[in-house]
Length: 466
Ligand code: TYD
Ligand code: MG
Image (tube, rainbow, N blue to C red; front, side):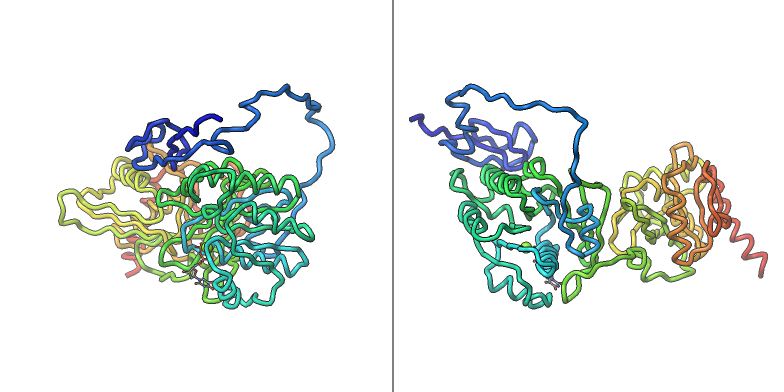
């Protein structure tokens, strides 16, 4: 028999090297190489590679042909079903990632109970918590009487034997993938080899039986699913459960989905009785508005296919420092520098002697460039001390030339704003016809300078009134 060879695997990127080093050559991460054996099993690749056999011809087929809709099991929790694209797909594997303590186990316990309530057989396997702990959580969530079948187990072979008994489950939840280990790999649980092997075994189970499998994964500080980034490529869908420290709302975001859209989000609020669905996120992010305060602008955004209104708050204050401070929460700081530069260069608004703070209300994170215009409006409003109209929303992308560029879904954004009682909008010049309602009360700006003039104009109007 071949002597077991020792190899080192980077726990961040999965790169294999024969020698240990402080830094991974492939991804540059420090202290991530871990010794993992290769004697037989997973680490050494398929056994067939060692004794090559003659291949078997498979039937080739055409692109056209019968297609079946992915058979789904919907949980009835609308926000969860929206993020998965209509429910868990039978025979598929789904990875739910998120920071520790964000509420993954809570979400899946609630989903399990909801599905069991609809007559599905659900098995919840926890490798992190004892049965008593899970029962306590279920009590707190008010689902203790549901028919979910529970086990505290970490060995993949034992789990497969357990769920192989009796009626085939409709959904198996494994909490978490980092705790699982299989006899086939001889590394410690949580290492890349183990996680990959365990995930592979569970995915194979899903494909061969038609049961849906949910894997839970913890994310590291860098935002990667700890070590097992590799799992992301193996599963059919990846959902991230996110939230901002100190805030109660949670967002379930699809980042990969072989059976549905990837830009959908589900919004929840964590309470003392578990997660509550938030079907109208705008109300959450607009909750604590104080009308007539300078520096606040409402951005009409889009998340996936759903409009979300968020308040953007800016504070511009004279700086005692030679290099003024710029601090951003919930938005991109490079983008803020760009907006400040455009305001200085094209609109004659100076921030060089001022500290600038920008905050997105409610702990929400915006990644859309369409927020540029709302940010610029909030900045100018704070600098001049002029409050923006409380019933006005802003959206539009700002280019380096100071022009305002059109963004997608203008109609939808306006419709949501109108629904929430807004009467005005500042938006890019659109080629499409804007419908009635707020569309007619809107200001279509071609350049950022026009918007600045409009905000400053309210000063003249105010002083004329007096
Ligand atoms: P949990 O689901 O255990 O997180 P994860 O599985 O992602 O690590 O959630 C833990 C946190 O959620 C914990 O800080 C307590 C809080 N929580 C509530 O606020 N309300 C509840 O009803 C439950 C069950 C948990
Ligand atoms: Mg957990």
